Image (cartoon, rainbow over all chains, first blue to last red; front, side, top):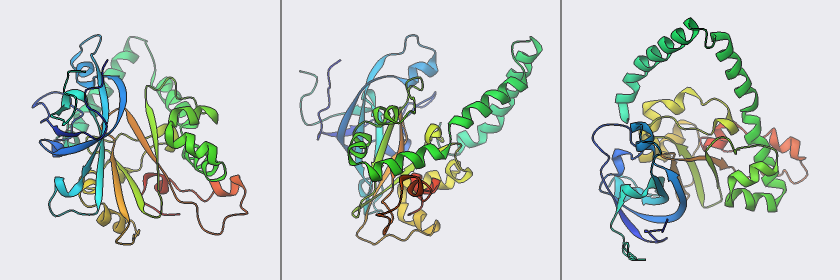
Length: 98
Length: 197
């Protein structure tokens, strides 16, 4: 399973799906963050919740957000979240051609 | 599954779980006593003392500390905490003079129970979950933790397969303390990031 988003890449976060289980917090929707690490493949929780067997494996990435980019009245902290590949889009390097 | 929606649903979930247990008892599959025993057995092993022990070891053993920060699960195995059946990854994040770490789960209430035992009520509250990411400094002040303005705060939102624990800074003037004495200085809130030691 190839790593699509390289460390240091800026990614944009998609919106969580409107119904059903998700592990994508709504406050991160459409925000930009930086890929810190790729944690490897994990069973995708939305598939598990939907009863899809076996669940798809998705790469999990730790993404860092500058809190000021999330809320303009906040400064001096970062928020880290582990997000599955299908939650991410964009990226400034190596789009799916590796 | 975010925000107040899930909170409102928790009563309904309890009702469904209780109905399920009643049905399982009815058909003789298991008893409430067996469930209670399983919970007692789990929390006998899943205690905050595990976290305290890990922290004390990291303070006295730099090789262990580095391994712990690099690969939480492997380091835990080294000191006899088996995580292989949990399908869960542990990441330990280190407080330094420059960075303070705070743990939250904004989606629900994910928490490293194996290392810290059952989570405190406030950790599951809507107020903590909402405010920890947006105004961590304000949250820390509510806990009586006043950080210098230049200290950077890193908030770890437990969104997926990782559970986080803070490695607090070692208290000053503890150079001669034994590992056991150091473990006794660690607090649960220190491991969540809502207290200093």
